[in-house]
Image (cartoon, rainbow, N blue to C red; front, top):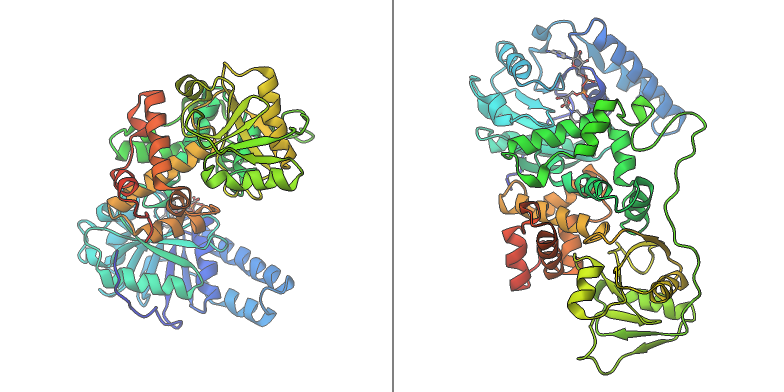
Length: 515
Ligand code: NAD
């Protein structure tokens, strides 16, 4: 996107925030803390005053915790000025709207404001899903409209997507970029397309988990534990959905799905829609994927019982990203042999007690066993870091014997890893999720919605991923991601798992997704 640099708005410039709800109040807090005077407007009776009072309490609490001085807290509260008419925005240099998510309401607001503010005043929208291009169309100066998309809660989430519509002046986007950076945020440029970066590229995080649940591959607690303890994600998908609200999540998914002409990659989950219909919205309704009623214990992840440590393991070929697993086994006192003669054996596997233990490649264990002739096949999932992960998901081929399966589990347990067995799901949990996240990010990069680096930064700073999906694909090998997607596509026979042309290209050329 734009490489243009522009200085930030000076701290003495007046900023108006329209809409004093959850987002508007949070944005007003950031802006006031950064030294700007903030005009706050809401059509709700006393909405702006109530938000101002709450923010004054927030500043006091921050001072009590030592996060700011009490003088600064008082000064910040004093800089937030509730107003009762849009006409009071006349001197604003920037207006940020965070009103109801309705295109017509937002258009009407901008039309009204154009009659009030100077032609060079920037009009920024916090919309999550509406087109910035459509919002600016018909205005006298559409070039000054851009998205300034904060994440919830704005004071805590670092990412701000600076969204340019077709008519947005690059200088406007550049000014918002440096201004947001000056507020201590991590800005990234994005084009106005459905979901921008994060709300589009993060869909597979939820979609793959919901699909596994639909297939009864595992329960939510097990999938969440695998995503946290193997994937390194701060929260599992079901925990996060309960926090966000299933209603909000279904609305975002449906809006992105419709905007992309019902692309099967974004198809809303039937399970989740049923939950919304039942009122199981998540924490806010007391029940979602988990039950939040007082006294209810959170279910625990399925974990295989302790098996004995193997007498030895034999490593065949290169284990790729999972190589450090063997070092953990060795460090735990398990004798490790490296097979000299390969050829007749599958490569990239650990032989243990008759089992063939291998990293998933997107096939089911049963199909891979059938294709390789290694009937006692046990596949394990991808981990963010095999040197430190505390849990791994495994899948056992239908042809695998009990004794061989126990030996495979014992080898992983000897390395200090809890084992969660899933039904024989293709690509297990972390691998299929990471492959699909990287796939979506690659398409977003190919469509120049943002630069590959900005896309990864957005996923780390907007939704707290432990590693950007494109960098993750580079780390495990783009060809591995391509193969996993191809195997998932073959397994399901669905267009949903089609490979991004950028992944296909880079897998062949050997070039990285992030230079
Ligand atoms: P909210 O319902 O908490 O607040 C909206 C506020 O706007 C309300 O106080 C309402 O009275 C006021 N309002 C409505 N119409 C108005 C108008 N015409 N003029 C002035 N005030 C008006 O909603 P929210 O969660 O703060 O979301 C606001 C915007 O931010 C939406 O566009 C939403 O899509 C976007 N957003 C929300 C989130 C989130 O997680 N909640 C995250 C990013 C972006």
